[in-house]
Structure formats: structure tokens, C-alpha cells
Image 1 (cartoon, one colour):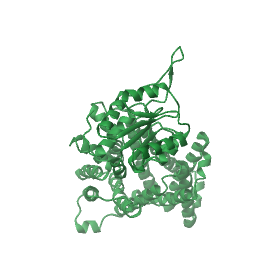
Image 2 (cartoon, helix red, strand yellow):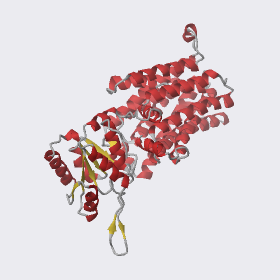
Image 3 (tube, rainbow, N blue to C red):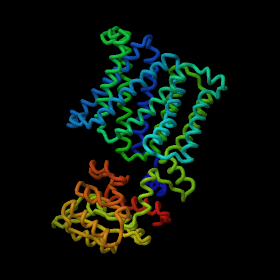
Image 4 (cartoon, helix red, strand yellow):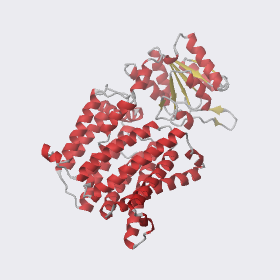
Amino acid sequence: MNNFLNTFRDGKKIIGEEWMKWAFGEAVCKTGAKLLQKSVGQLSSTFGHIYAATLVIGLFQVIYAVSRGLFDKSLSSILDAPKHILGSIFYGVTFSVATILTFLVFANGGDVGVNTLIVTLSIVPGALIDYLFFGNSLNLRKILGITVAIIAGYVVLGLPSLSGISNLPLWVNLSFAVMLILAVIQGIAKWIKESHPLTLNFWGGLATVLVSLLGLRWLGQTGFLFDFSLAMQKFWLISGGVGLFFIGAWIFNLLSYKYGAFIAFKNLITNSSYLIMTMVLGVLFFGEPATLFKLGGILVYLLAFVLFDDKSWAMIRFIFPKRAIFFSNQELAEKLKKIKLLALDFDGVLTDGFVYIDQNGKETVRCSRKDGLAIEMLKKFNIKPYVISKTVNPVVAARCKTWNIECSQGVGESGGKAEILKRITAENGFSQEEVAYMGDDLNDEEAFRVSGVAITVADGHSKIRSNVDYVTKARGGEHAVREVVELVLIAQGHDVKF
């Protein structure tokens, strides 16, 4: 998020950045999946067809998980903790129900554009699940966002009267049922958020396959699985396309973040593109009506999304009232308010992690002048910067002398860094919660444990990225410290002027 703010502040181009094509690709895949789901629904003359199509989707998930595990040599991650496996199975069962109901929506004449908007309203029950089960607060802005989202649903349905609401078509009621189930799925995903992605794909996909097989057996229609007539070949092909699009959307989502997507901007692009494309293509391919109610529903929904989503709200509030910056993670903001000491690893944080050697064997490193300015700002507001380096290097001493800050070198492995950090904390009379430590590799883990706020850089080791309070958008040596310093100063109510 802060990267977005820096980009906007510096006047650089945002439109056309590489991550955008992956975000748009995700929207295209989600649209493709939705359109093919409607095609499957129209081709389905029995419940057996619907169970068979759902089975294909689950099978594609399992195949993807196994093939990806073999390719990455991470197949063993499928055997995750029992909680994660059980959660993935629950995820797969609820996903199966949502998928079956979605096919039923279109088998009963559902409008693909209206269904898409209704389903995206899962943010409303999702917020209640967050509040009831995960302790997330519901402030006035989010409650307003929920209210606006409900209005969006009312608008897209054509502003029906009370009697009209009680007589909505079956497919509309089924769409709302899917919306509720998707909110439950989001809750399950949050419950098992530490699980490996392959665990979710394998066990979730396997659960989907089993639910579908049980459904076919219950109906006495397992013969569908061995029907490869010309009509069924088309059915199998379209069902497989749905599975491929689901996997594609997931991959593109990961790629967009890999190439530096701003969460808020990415979600706005993906959601708006998805809604617009489904409504437009629903009109073109299925002859669905093009109404102002649909357009109005999209616009109202996007307003609701901005109000509800913390990161989107932060982006909008920065662009318009220049001084108003809100943190997407309120817990992090509260922690940063208390910081009085920012301890920094040198290699990989203040540098890009590379060592440059000339023909005479002399070593040099690259540092960011913006990081130096940030360190000066810390001192201005009486926040102590301190550098801790594993090795002894004259470059470290030279940079710290330039910045006029203290440093400790040659502290050995991670335990040594932790001991240094505890000593500095005690000598300055700070408590642990008043200390932030910024590192990039496994030898920083112990130091993270004795600090109040653990921070790493975008290219930090994957193991520590998943266990810290904040991961910078910038890579080490590329103004990552500047990013963190701005967050600290803003959290503490200071004007950020460099």
C-alpha cells in the first residue's frame, strides 16, 4: 500500500505496470469460468449433469496440486497439519455445494451479470463472520459499506417492491444462497490461512470429487461418468474449461502480487473488470437484457467495496484529502505508534544483498540515499535507529558514521543479534513493544522474537515473510527502510516531509 502512495506522490505512471496484466488476467479467467458455468447449466437436463460437472472441477484441482507438487518437489506439503487437512476438506465440501448451486442458478435461467454481482456481495456476511469468529472490528465506515452493498444488490435486481422481493425467481434466491456459502468458504480459508496452497487444492479438490461421486450414486446416475457420446463430449469439454479457468484465476492472482501489485488497486481492477465483463458478455453471448440497473448496481457495489476494504479506503483517502492516511492493518498501526527504537540489519535491508568486487578485490555495496534521509527523520522525532550486522565490514562503519548512528558488527549468528538487541533495549530503558527490528534472512529470527514489531523486505526469506508483522513492498536496498520509517512516523502522527 505504501508503495502505491510513494508512486502516486512521485508522479510516476501507474497505468500499464506489469502486474496489471496479471490482475486483468485473473478477471478474464473468473469471467470465463462464470460464462462456462452458465453454458454447463443450460446443457444440464438432470442433477446428474450438475454433479458430473462439479466432479470435473474437483478433479482438475487434484491434478493441478499433484503436478505442481511434482514440479516443485513439494508434494510432501500435501500432508500438512491435521487442522489444515480437515479445514481443506471442509473447504472442498462447501465449495462443492456452492458450485452445484451455481450450475442450478443457470439451469433455471439465471442472468450471469446479476448473479455475479449478487455473489460478490459475500463481503457482507463475510464481515459478520470476521466479527463473530475472528475478532475483527466493524467500524462505522464498514457498516456504511455493508449498507451500500445491500443497496447495490437491490439496484441490480431492478428496485423491486416488497411484494416483488417475496416473489423473486428461484435462480435469484439460489444466487443469494451461493453468496452466503462463499462467505463461509472465506471464513474456512482464513481459519487455515497458514496451510500450504497445495494442501488446499489437493484435499479440497478430493472432497469435491467425493461429494460429486456420492451425489451421482445417490441419484443412480454414475453412468454419466462413462458416457462419451458427442453431446457429452461437449459437456465434458466445457466442464473442464471451468476447472482450467478456476486454476488460471488462482495463478494470475499470485502472479499479480509477485510482480508488485498494490492490493487495493489490484482488487478494484479485478472486481470491476470481472463485473463489467460478465454483464457485457452475458448480453452478447446469452442475449441477457442490458439495463441501467445493472450499470447502477456495479457503480454502487464499487463504492461499497471502497468503503468496506481498508486498503482501498486508504488509497482513496490519500489521493483526495492529502493528509488523511489510514492503515489497512489497524493492529500494525497501534504497534507502530509505540516504536522508539528501529534496529536494522545491514546486508539485505540497507543494501540489495549483493557485494560488488572490482579488479583489485575491493568490495563495495549499494545503499539507498532515501534510506539515509529516512534515518535522519527518525532522529528528528527522537526515534533511535541502530544497525546490527553479522559480519565486520568497514562499509557498515562508514555508512553509520555518515548517518551519525550507532552500530554493532560481528555479532555472529541469530542468537548474537538477539542478545545485542536486548542489550540496546535495556540500556535505553525501552520495553520490548517499543522496539522494531528489520531483517531479511533466517539469522534474524531470534531478533524478531525479542522485538515488538518484526519487519522484513519484499525479497526476504520466504519462511520469515510469513511470520512477521509487516513485509515491505520494496526490496532490500531499494528504499525499504524509507517505506518503514514513513509508516512509523505517520502512525505516530508526524508530518512526513523529506
